[in-house]
Amino acid sequence: MKKYLVDKKEDIKGLEVIPRELYFKLTKNFVRTIIGPRRAGKTYSLYDLILNKVRIKDEDYLFINFEDEEISQLRRGEIVKAISFHHEIYGKEPEFIFLDEVQNLENWERFVYSIFEKKRYFIFITGSSSKLLSKEIATQLRGRSLSTLVLPFSFKELLSFKKVEVRDIISTVKENEIKNLLRVYLRDGGFPDLIFTEVERRKFFRDYIDLVVFRDVIERFKIKGSYLIKSMITNMLSSVSSEFSINKLFNTFRSQGIRVSKKTLYSYASMLEDVMFCFFLRRYSFSPRKTMLFMPKVFFNDTGLVANALMEFEENIGRLMENLVFLELKRREDLGKVSTPYYWKDYQGNEVDFYLSKPNNQLIQVTYASGRDEVTKREIRALMKASEELKCKNLLIITWDYEDELEIEDKRIKCIPLWKWLLF
Image (cartoon, rainbow, N blue to C red; front, side, top):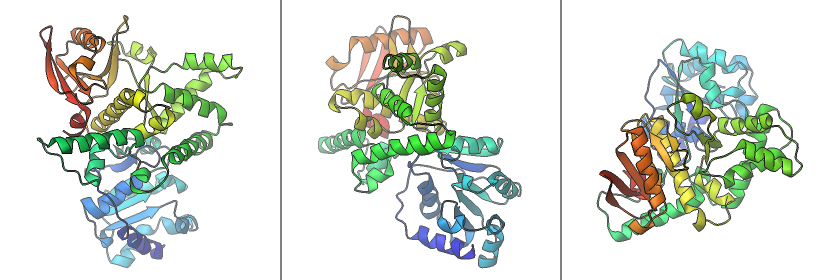
């Protein structure tokens, strides 16, 4: 154990870690849990904190990855003495404790509680969704944790990695470069493996889905067979940015002679959302009960995952843009900048992509438009109707390449290109 504690720090120092736009408020009164989908970079967010953001000295932190082979071969009694071993090696207790994939330690809760209750350390833990959901880590800690969402790289983070500087006023050439990178980002997504390595895109996403199905769903929830889950994922991907109906999927399976209950399909959908493979956006209603009964819209943890599944990229850019806006809203919600997003729809079928009650009661439409003539009457009509019903004056249309402020029926609608909305 002593050798591992020292060697691990040498391994971390040898890594090239790209800084991310993730900030952890340091506190000893809570355990910080890192949540997010598989392979989004939870572990590297800890490395980023150690090497870049705080620049923690070796003697000030202890790092254990419970998936490392050296740790798996140790007895529990030796592992729980890690802090004492650190004190022996460095002459002081660590100030920071990082426990990665902590669920691999039997009765990990008792270990974490025992060090947390001393209130002497900054404690960070992550958990693999194949064995124990990060959400459940927070539940196990019974209100003693603060969670931080880690999604694949945002577009802003990608530009930072590409060393593309963006100012309030940029040249046409620079703007075109940014839009080209955005188009590529919509297609390839932001998973670190795709950004930093030469892995083949289609193979990565094919393997990623297999990993989610077999390790995050089948293994964790102890269910049999993968065909139904994979078929469900295929149907969900084709419904991206649209309402997703379990009842419709049930009828489709039944027409194909596949026997499955609606209860099972609802259960599978819940599992896929739990592991943050997908997210369901609820329809807004003044009645919370109706909100839960309405069909949700489905989005995914990365646009590359969707683009890889859809046959025609150009024909689906608008849907990918909407998925990307949803992910950015999730990031901003996690930071406390916006409230939980909903979509709005009335009985006539008028629909607005996103509604945010806070901070400023905003309605957002997303459209693949490059000019005023490409912003449809249907999109504007829906904004007008939602604005009246929700008493909302903050109206926004996120476009591909059109910027203006429209005045319609004594209301102002701001139009902004997607790249600008993502960056400012």
